[in-house]
Image (cartoon, rainbow, N blue to C red):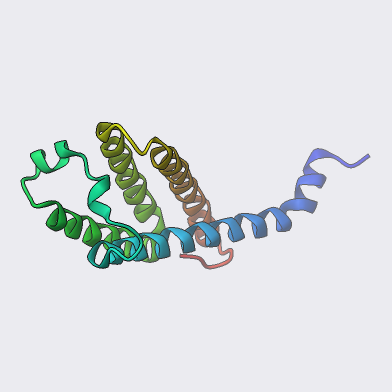
Length: 147
């Protein structure tokens, strides 16, 4: 019968590969999606983003809804770039941003389905953060170089 350490050693390369693949998948989606959604804040091709804006948000930051969404778009683009360049930091920025979006939607009192979806994305951003920490550790140990 093989020992537990022998079994772990046997499966270590497959686990490392799966971890790296999960890291790359999450890094890609949390780079591309915020940038695309941020750009769409200026074009409204996907939707009219102002309908998702709670009145409390514009009361807090006295900007016209369209201008407010432009600022949101810039922040989302920056968040996507941050994930591409520094995934450990960028993933936390995206998670915090998603928390803000969720709060905004709850204050709006509608779009609860979108809030729930964004909560799932927030959890994914936090998972990317944990994988980034693991990937950074592997890089420091001389493993596969990552972001």
